[in-house]
Length: 200
Image (tube, rainbow, N blue to C red; front, side, top):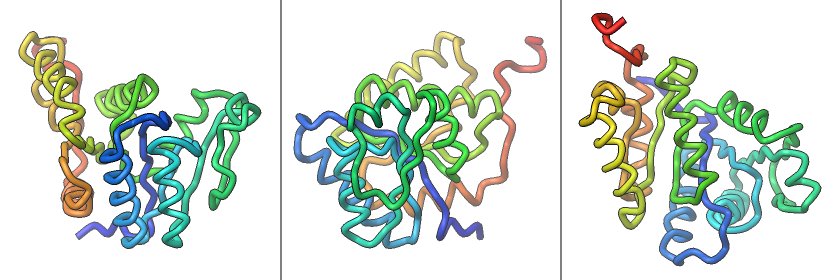
């Protein structure tokens, strides 16, 4: 079996401090489980919202919290001040590339436009065979139900091949994360093509 212990996962999530507490609790639970399994957590280095809750919980539990932030956000003071490691990039594009490169899996928690953009981009990279690693969506409180329905609509209307639905896994509780990470890590890497050969 593949062993993801002592590996790194990238976590995409909200930085808004005004969200409902159940989202914060789910983020803390996820962070605790990852730390217990010796998994380094890579975030956008934020100090508020789900990102702040993740980083706080990781640090409090003796885990490794690696933050990657673009220079303009660092200059604005948006970064967590007690991370295990802080990397400052020249721009947001380099930030996302480094976060993905450091990881063996990507996990999307609830979030706003930034999180949605990160999730859409990493799925696109996987579709183009640029990121052949697990992508997991934590669907706390059914937050991503509408997005998942939209992805189904893409398939139904032939804007996306049905095989692309294998690019991600959905969990409703942090308790599922290690089983799914292990299952996905053990899968043989498969090539997802944007079109069937007969369409080329």
